[in-house]
Length: 616
Image (tube, rainbow, N blue to C red; front, side, top):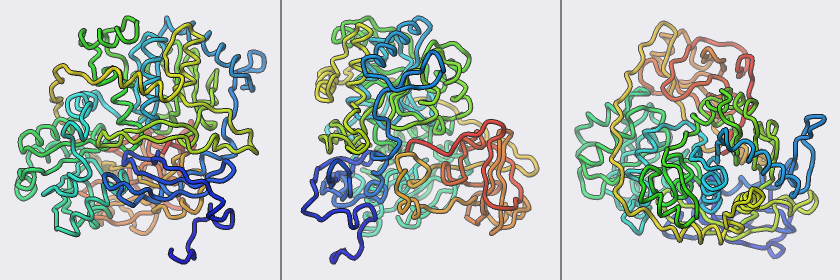
């Protein structure tokens, strides 16, 4: 606002502009990679504004990136290590020396039985590299995965074949390519909710020069309307067949030189979809790009925080690639691919792992939150690196506090593969009144922990971690072939049943949006959407309540109409009472029971309730 009549609630009446210190940074909330300016005073962030970067976000950023920063100064921030007391069984404060020694002792004892490493999608490249190296050097395992969300082996094969190592410098798709493309097809990707700056580029290209945008999905979302897009409507699970049989104007548009096919991480929930997208790109010549939701996922992929790839995209099964890393690290690496996130969780829940190292993962984000909580309770030894109390810290033997993105230097790789470097904004977002200054970056914590285990990571600073990662270079060998996974048949539906379509929204229950009620107040309401014909068939009154349930649990939401395929119901993945994973144990394409409901919106999860949550 040019006259200052509209100001943010976090900044209003708390400071004058000349009292602020401004620091350039990069948004930590999604893979868009937006440049930002952070204004702070006395160790507390008061406002954020978009930075100017013509290559990426130009001069824009989304509401989440601008206002969701209060989590870093939350009253419940962890400021010192915690160790589980051997007498009363509770967590008690401890010194860093005691906590690191206790963690090292426990992990060394668990190492022979196997230790899994789960890192989540919030990490900088430097932190992800430290986790990847810690897993291989200190724990002697490839059981590491950054995908704290629904995922698949097909996805890893797709990323190895088409994503890892691809950057703007090597011919990868860029923001400018989207702006100049003759056409764009979005597959399992809702741009306005999952990458707002990509959405703005698509919207501007559609508005300014009439670029056609095609959306393969379930209904006409706001992003479809605002990009003047064309919906290719399919039921959940029908996406691979739709791509394989694509013809007409959409197919012709992709045949044009420079056309782009954007694939979202939700494709991992549909068997055969990544394979079909790769086939379509190969047959049309369309340029292929993968856009994850979280800021750290692309960097974690490159850094080797996966069960099948070492840093630089080197396959763990390639002896030449392993030899390169072994020479640099001075260790012998296993040639056997590790377990993915689901495999690690299942093994821990079955008592087959001696321990877990978990960095910023919320069980509510995982495919089966209930199984994840069982894994936490049955793992022999759990080390949690976290900013705030969570389901993981409550079950952990050792809790090590780590710095937020505001309190450390580092870099992210945006969806293009472009490095987005930033420096430390403030010494501690916790604030001096809350004992600030006690946290460290993940890479330094892991380096110190490895030293206690008699190993050297050389990741004591983000700069040292980046130097070690950059020195390895990228994989020069032959890429693996595209995945060839067949599509799964769409389930047959009985009476009162429907197929569930779901994805997460930009503003939802994610913990990194905590502390900003005014931002939360702008979130779209949680409703269950279905066509009028489906509502009639299921006996649901549009405008009333509808209950969606599985054997795991149920949730009741307002029912509203949308142009979904027959016998399909859509609910947001983690918004308000709509907690699909925690309440239903379900996902995109799951068969659910739908019937008319009464009363206020509620969510239950059977005997084992999981609090609303999620990382972002």
